[in-house]
Image (cartoon, rainbow, N blue to C red; front, side, top):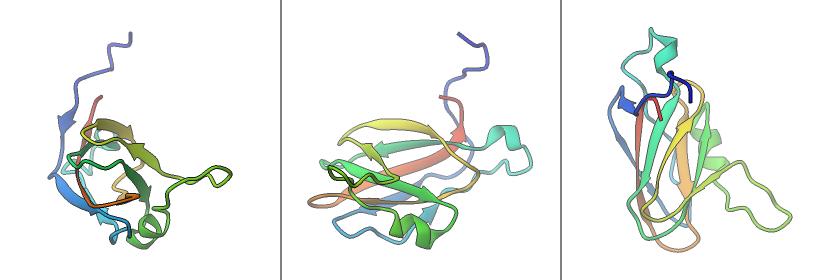
Length: 117
């Protein structure tokens, strides 16, 4: 295993995304270490709700909102499903916007920028 793999370290404030059956306006979780490009791009995503949330991410708020679509058979979408109660660490581009959608009900998702796994 690579010695470069470190535990997740927050590098910015946690933002709250409330996903529902209609995707909310995309939100951004910027890092505090914008000058150190080696330190950006990892995001800890925790779904505290009781619904699976399909998370979208994009360079603009509008695009993140538009791309929050639940995939179906024969209709692939650029989202990542995060199960109820699950935490995922995603390696993405610098300071993307996040949105999310559920099939029923609301779910609160916490997004924290940082580095590591």
